[in-house]
Length: 170
Image 1 (cartoon, helix red, strand yellow):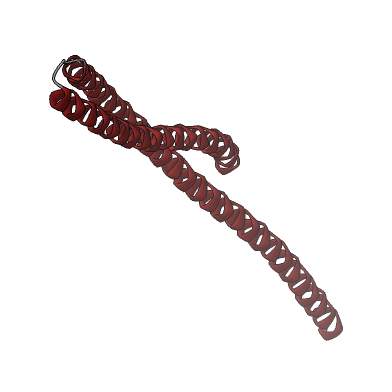
Image 2 (cartoon, one colour):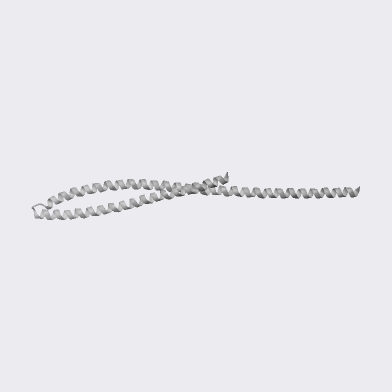
């Protein structure tokens, strides 16, 4: 009887140890799988945050580019107005100086020709100044348009990457 009892006890303890080790192995397997899933979720969250930041940068590029283009258009309009005024003033001054240079009084004609040269030099200087300003404005506009293009391109790629990261995330 004692032998049977010892044998049964031995078998029971063996079964208990085997089943507990199987349960532990399964729980370790589940814990490992859970850890793997948590890591995947963390990576997806990180990608979402990174792509969101890229979209914010792209949006700011578009905004800055649009403001640069708007400023350059306004400045170009101002330069155009100044150019028209300069041309009109030059034409008026040149006309009156030309009339005086055709005068019969030699002293007055010589002074008028000198004045005509001075008016011409001032016109060319002012015109060149306006041309330089217009070149700077054109460069600013081109830079703004390039920023808009870069922003749209970056936004599209970040949007696609964000879409992929969101699909992985859930």
